[in-house]
Each structure stands twice: as C-alpha cells, then as structure tokens.
Length: 381
Image 1 (tube, rainbow, N blue to C red):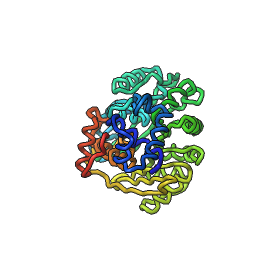
Image 2 (tube, one colour):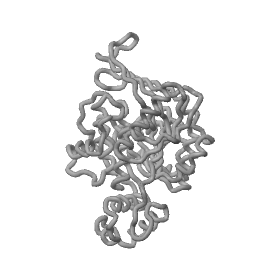
Image 3 (tube, helix red, strand yellow):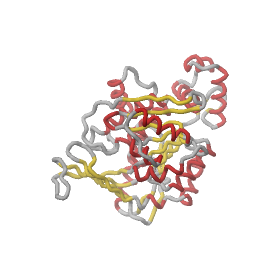
Image 4 (cartoon, rainbow, N blue to C red):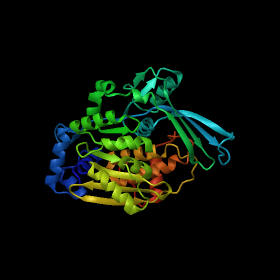
C-alpha cells in the first residue's frame, strides 16, 4: 500500500474514532504496528495530529485554484438543428470547473477555499455571492479588471452537450505573481485541486510548490485543448496524486491518439505514471471509467467501473462532480478505488439534474446511490 494512501486511511480512521490505539489501528487496517507508528509520526510532523495520544487537528481546507465563471446553459426542446434557430430555454448559474468542484466539496461538508479570478462587473458580484452562499471560502478570490468569465453551453433534448464556448480571459490573469500572497494557504492545504484553465507556467509552479510543502495534487484537465498544453508540464520531478481526463483529454496530455479499448487506455495511463502521476482516472462516458494506480510498493493496478444507471437530463458538470466526489471520499476513507465508486455515483446524480451542482446535494444522497449499485458503502464517506 502506498505510504500516502496508508497515512490517509489511518487519519480517516482516527477522525472517525480518536480513541483508537496503535494496536487497534494495526488490526483494523491489517498493517504491522511498526508501519502504523511510522504513519502516525509522519502525520504528526505534518500537523495532522498533535498533543498527547492521537489528538486529531482541525481539518485543513481543500484549496481549489482555477476557473470561476457564470454559466449560460441553453437547452433545446427538440433535437438540435445547426444553422438555424432552435426553440428552448436558458439557465443562468455559477460555473467554472474549479468553482464547481469547490462548491460540490463544500456541499459535501468539506472546508474549501477557492482561488480564482473574478471581475467587478454584475456577473462577478453575483458569482461571488452565490459561491459564498454555497459554503465556499471566497476570501482569496483575485479581483481583475477583466470582465468575469462566461461559459455558454448548448444542450440538446437528450441532455448531451452540442457545443460549449468559454470566455476565460479573467482566469488568464491568475499569474504566479498574483498567487504569491496565497502561498501560506496553499502550503497548509489538505489537498490542492488545479483545473486546466490555468496556464502551464502557473500549473508548473504550483506543482513545484505543492511538492515542497508536501501537499497532494488533483489535476482536472478540463478539455482537450487545455490538456494539450498541460501535458509538457508533467514529469517525474513534479508528482501528481490524480489526474481525471476523458479519453480525448488523455490523448491531449500525451500528444498522440489513444484508443478506446481497456488495453490501450492502460498503456496510455502507464505513460502518465512514468511522468509522475500516481492515479489516472479515465472517464469513458456511457462505458463507465477506468482507474489505473501506480506506486513503488504495489506497481500498477487497474480497476474498471461500469457507469451507474441514470436518467440523463444534462451532462454539464458531470466531470466536475466526479472529481469532487472522488476527492471527498478519498479524504474520508483513504482508498482511491472506493473513492472512484463514490465519485461516479455523484456524477450519475448530477446528470439527472438541470443544476451543474445539485442544490440538494448531501453525502447521504450520494451514499444512497452507491448502495443502489454496490453491496457496501465507503465508511465515513
């Protein structure tokens, strides 16, 4: 078991019951007492445990850095016809990959701080107010002279995306210089989430800084175009805990086509493992997903997940919710396989709603969906 996963599982167990002894932890997690002792010492050195016994420190925030926009989602009432006007209805709501992940994590009960660029225009004011109301920390937002970002999505009557257009000029203002005042927040994060709307230079600097601070990183590739410019940033000197591309984005990261078969996806994931990515979780749409994990201790392990049944209303935000659900469950139980089940269940709930982030989202709602599809639920998720 990789040391980071082992440490996370021990921390999750102590958060559920701080009274556990070293022997209890070793028995429950099937580990040697000396191994548990080593993990406890690492957790203490990083400030997750303190005082006498195993006093669990207050949870650190998850820090999300990326895009925050207002979404204009237009749904056609009938199959979309290009080159002409289509009848439909529109929804105006907060969006952006990073912001969506942050809100989803907050609604699941996690402390979250968002670093993103917003303008002082009416859209920016609304974006900040509604994001804060959802429970996301907004004190570290970067104010910019650019107008706030906008994402326009056209969704057909089957719920599938026809075309999406994003204006992310505000996010382009998130530079290394603008992030420097937030270094302490980043260094103290429990996890750092980066979305691919950031420039390659910024992503590279953040990966280096996170490595120096000992903070694990989840990287959401966002789109094929963004994946193509992120790919060269990834190398073994900049370890990444998890990346979450679809197959086309995986090809963009690698700079060459990737087939849809399991064997081809596994081979492509192995290339990312060689570049320092521990977990490659590939979204396969209706075919579910594939998680390839790698560590010095265990080598490569591959897990495939069938897509949960869902009545699709709108696919917008499904990938964001998958990433957020995965991260929430990993922090709760320390196991990426159980985390992937939870994330995929959350995505199936998201596509059944017109909301990019469901307003009724709770851990219990997701656990019920997991129970529907699995015999057991990740404890503590």
